[in-house]
Length: 395
Image (cartoon, rainbow, N blue to C red; front, side, top):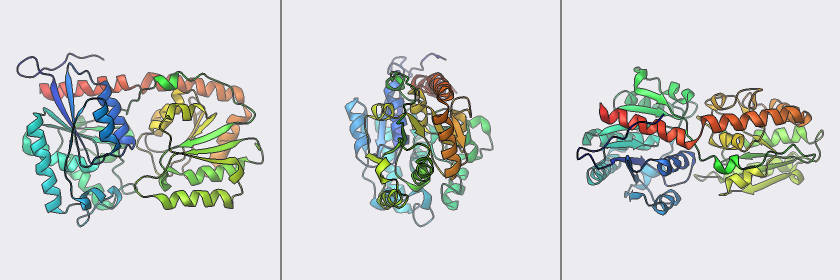
């Protein structure tokens, strides 16, 4: 739905949105934000970005001409992991407040009309800075606020501050929004992390070959479940000896031990010869296009699932674990197969069913492409977000 743009008091200036993020690593949340910024209507809104560190995300932003501010941030604040946030690890008041005041200066310098915080650390730090500056504040929650995803202290802290700091909370799925446990539900909404699906939609549909490539794409970390994928591969190899299994991705945030364990697991399962570790790929559309069947294997409920959407838009049959926001993307037996988390036999069974029934696989893949293009485009997401900006500014 299109809405009329909101101009500044002079009737000419586009409103300025200051996006704040704690990292410059191109992880899922940062990729989603980059897509949103690229798609904003610049006659209505001018994006400005504040980051607590420099890196690939900042490079991408500068490349597309976005004003980007890098704040000098204490190392111990940057290194605090979201799953270990606690009174001693994150809320080191001196380091935190110095960053808050630096963000406040950027808000004033850039004449921001809205602060849009894009990560949990940014929610707190930019949230305090935004409130001190008297501007409208949006929290974008892209992580499940639950004890199986965060520390108990962090879960309680985020839920408490969610009712105090932001004027509105945006979550990347209804499942994510429910974990925040907002008392005033009108102050929150689910807006899916839309993507530029053009390159994926352009991939020609093709039937499953006799020697299919079955792949998983994503950061190498235990909760993403690449080890479950390998266990499923070991089950499938006898019935489908011509199949190959491809892992696309690499570790982030120092998680190299898990990557090493995956290589060892493939060896111990006797599937080294049919397993490809393809590494990190920037050309994700090409990488997904090379696959014949896509697998999502997370063992913890996924907040959303961008790569699942991409695979669906590419017309790939999808097998995904049932949890978090994934059932909002994949309809079981309609646009993919859903299986229980942490269950390699169930995953292998769903993959085998699609491989045995090529007509069923083609039907599921066709439905998947239609659903992805209809519901998860970046233009749809950007329109919803810009409508929200207008609504907040008009109040």
